Image (cartoon, rainbow, N blue to C red):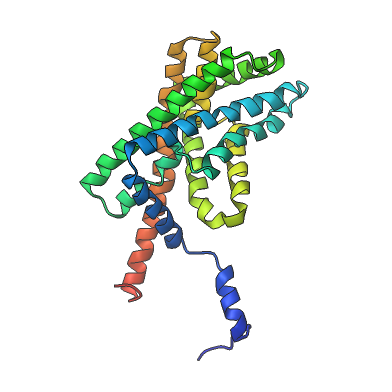
Length: 279
């Protein structure tokens, strides 16, 4: 026996519009983006990655600028961390290729339908984007260090950020990288739901990365490269930062988001198939 609906027929369409999409819809949206990325040419990926690596410099610049103007108080880091979000806003809203976003998007097509050619495309995608991001970060960090465009107070703030990024043991950097990769991949998962609130999703989640001092491979590399250019520490310390942070970001993005999301969708598809909703 069907119960009467509390809304009239004219309101049913409005209810359907306001319903949040199922996880399968989000999965399919991101999976198709991943398929599109596989079809992009290597030069297009590389130059987009170069743009992203350069844009991430503004996370350090803005965070340092804010920090340099605040008193040395316990709350200073919490306020300055809002500056960290700027680089991510530029990169994501500008549709530039950032490595940590690509720990989720191109993996979903592989988890959905594994094919050998997709693994080859994934390796191409990751190597080109990571290489472009790091190359641009290296160049722009040198420009910040040597251009003379920033006053002494801001340079000292940049120095503090660089030392804070690098000054941790291997396992601590790895753990910090896991949390950062987890949050960035979750951000990618949430953006299809965000619509007009995309800016808030990006700001909130990347703010957490900065406030908690988690390690992001590109934003952190800008700080590490800057510190090495300035002679605050050696290039070996930069490598010692990049390796565990990169590994942690990959583990966070892949294991905690992509695999879990795929398992959820697979379970849902199996349930719907057994009930006869899909064939």
